Length: 199
Image 1 (tube, rainbow, N blue to C red):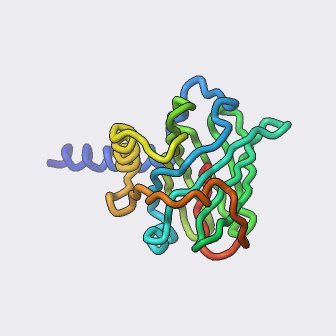
Image 2: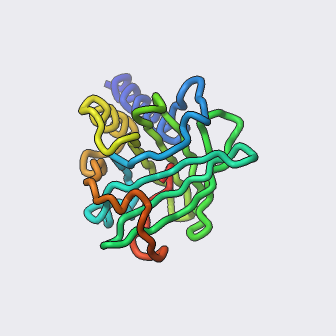
Image 3: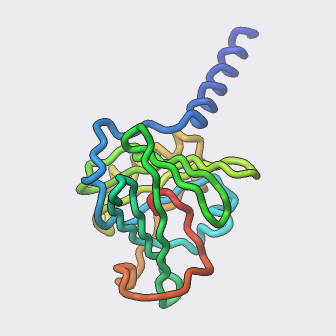
């Protein structure tokens, strides 16, 4: 019985360490192939912010470009009523290809962003560990080059999110929105804020 209890505790600790240590990164990551337009298809998070706002969230677009010094310029467009909001973020490359860091200028939270897996022309699975003074949270995002993805990709997103300790109620497939998402509309940067993680 004592051995069994130790084994269970050991497995639980291993799972917790794995979640804190970070996520896997796409092997042989090719940054240039990640550039261009993506649609957010799925979002999972255990943050309080997500739990409060998830019923308002919809699909958004993210455009990625590489800066002269090799970092990522990430421009996201979000629907807000009949307008669109844009937000620009700069992801700083790290020594590990496929891994980036970002610090929120507004909240001071630190983001460890990793491209977990992608085939570049169809989907990308991105995981982020967010740390701030009040605690840490995990976020997983599923991106697609089109507004729809195969059931297999959606299942992979759900499975990976669960592997990170996220519950089913913390996993969301985002509803589609109108063509304003293409970035044609303007709008003020206020109101609903989406979390960062290639978004």
